Length: 249
Image (cartoon, rainbow, N blue to C red; front, side):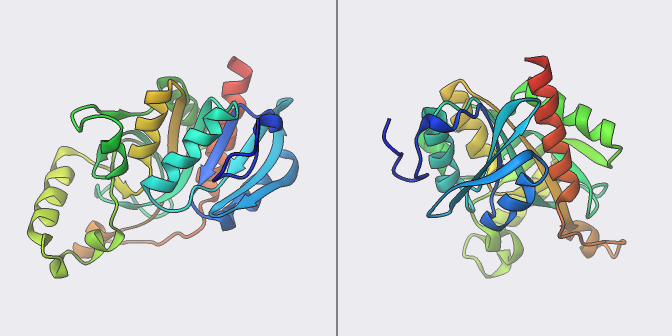
């Protein structure tokens, strides 16, 4: 097998499990929670490290921001033998109970991304793998972190969310935003729906755990709104979930 065009490596790594932050700058930090962490490859937005958990090789690789680069990462990692994908990301809270620093386990995602629409019609739901989700919830409980599990919104436009008034489609954006909150959506991020749809098509397993940065709805209501830029609790939850999945395999 030749090195794949985008991620820059072949299947000789031997990893079946991968942790997927968006930010290349977080890869080494996450890898330090594994045994024997070591740099593997860097190409484009894809920075890759390897380590071990419970005797199994585990990979950490960045996806960059948004659906297109996430889809490419999942497709090419699957070609190299990876079968279990866990995104470690950040999110903005939407539901009032989701506070900065809380962990959100995304059981499903609203498909506002464009990439997943090129895989399957929009009516098909973006849902996490049950075994991976259960492992993430079990890990969050074990670590005694404040966690929530439920649906998140997966968008393509960061500034469409944060500056809707200046967008020509701003009225539609704000109407949908209010509807999703009313339906119980927990938080907003940018990769989960793509990850879930691509994994589903490949018959791979995928889950997602997010660290809440802040909550713009709490801010608008004048409620206490702490900000958290360190995703350490989400990282620890994901690592423990991989450990549980390996043990149960």
